[in-house]
Amino acid sequence: MDHDKFERADFETAIQHAGYGRYQARLLCVCGIIYATCAMSTTTLSFVLPSAECDFNLTSSDKGKLNATPLIGMVTGSYLWGSLADSRGRRAAILCALLLDAAAAIASSLATTFPIFLACRFFNGFGVIGATSLVFPYFGDFLSIKHRDVMLCRLEVFWTMGTILLPGLAWGVIPSPWWWFGKESAPVAPWRAFVGLCAAPPLLAAAALAFLPEAPRFLLTAGRKESALDVIKGMHTANKTHNTFMVTSLSRSNSEPGSPSVHLSTTGNDTVEINNDSSIVNKSTIISRLCLKLSSVVELSKTLFSPPYLKFIILTCFVDFGLMFSYYTLMMWFPDLFERFGHFSLMHPGKSAGVCEVTSIVTMEGENAVDKCNSPVNSEVFLHTLIVGVSCLPTSITVGLTINKLGKKFLLVFMLMTSGCAAVGLNWVHSSNQNLILSCIFEGIISCTEAVLFCVIVEIFPPHLGATAMSLTVTCGRIGAIVGNVIFGALIDMNCVIPIYTFGALLITSGLFCLALPKNERRRG
Image 1 (tube, rainbow, N blue to C red):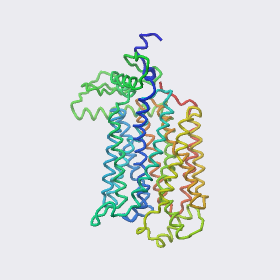
Image 2 (cartoon, rainbow, N blue to C red):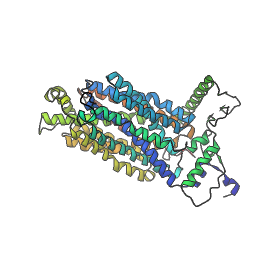
Image 3 (cartoon, helix red, strand yellow):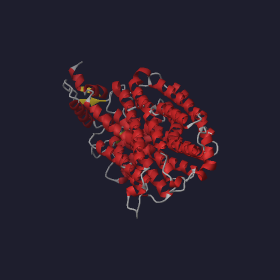
Image 4 (tube, rainbow, N blue to C red):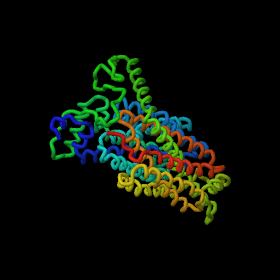
């Protein structure tokens, strides 16, 4: 390689020369902690529902609305977080999102009425979606193409760890007697203590992220070449690569789809260039800043909804809608379904019944047969949920090891269609153990599916569109989850066959849609 040419390298060349080792491992740990935190924050309500039901006099319809409220916050915040990250940086956006999530958890634990609790959970969703949707672009911007798929899929192991840790925490806190948390004159409900403790993980994750730099690929895209080079030099030093780092300047790769149409200077200069023309915007006024942000969002959106990216954003949005309509709804309702099976066993010892039959019987006669408000939550609820979480570990590990060999397209089609069949099978189980086994199969297969979809998004869309495309896709997924939870909450006591078959149909259809993905998803430099 020519020496002069090597001194001025594109991003991919520079990131490869920085080496692969300790720095990426440190990033994986921090981003993994963030993703595990997102898993815990996202599924907190699944354990609150059986416990808070009596405090707030919740019906099944109310539970569906409660599950949907954080999702509304996610939909509201997702695109805004993405636009903020694409214009101001991934790291800063993730930090703000984590801090908001922690504040919402503390406020939720203190809420005294159901409307206030709903409002707090709205802001919980608003915050957690920022970290969930941006951790993949942030981590991916440090990685070379060679290692990107494997490392991004390894994040899913941390999501699984979050889903395992949460029922363990809930099991240790929620069944505890009231007096353990406060004086007898002012006791604290265990479920409130549990929600309050859920503020600790996002605070720890934010503290860990504070020691990491902004993503170098974003810095290069934003025109901050020197800052990007400094980060890559730091990677080279941390990896203790034996070769000398010879890159002295960075250039955009010709194979990388273009410079962003909106170039935002965030280095402290007094000018910002838009569409590469000579117009100068004075950043000293609030109006100028608002106009700048609005212009950047409009320009990014125009590019995203134009060929060749239009067909891909439609596909990823539809797939995530169907995926989250089914996955998130059942994930949030599994503890409640396990609780219903427990009450059914008390009322009808030795009798077998399916999911829908159990929910109907418990609704018709179970409320009077068992005093749920004066009895602790059945420990099997936590045990079964813990087992479901553990069942995701083999898949999350296997996907990370096989994604390069099998390909993202194959994995998406296989996982969506298989989990769709498992969802339909929930109508045919006849006991609590059968329900647990099929729930493990469903959760184990589908838990990694969105991570694979995120890997596709990271590579289909260029850096200046990546976070916005990710956030828009996640927004559509959360809309699907909202619809799924509202429908399931409304129909579970009357005719739960309809939503369960809908889950299966949407997952299978989403799998068929993934056949339209190109065989080689890579479109980035």
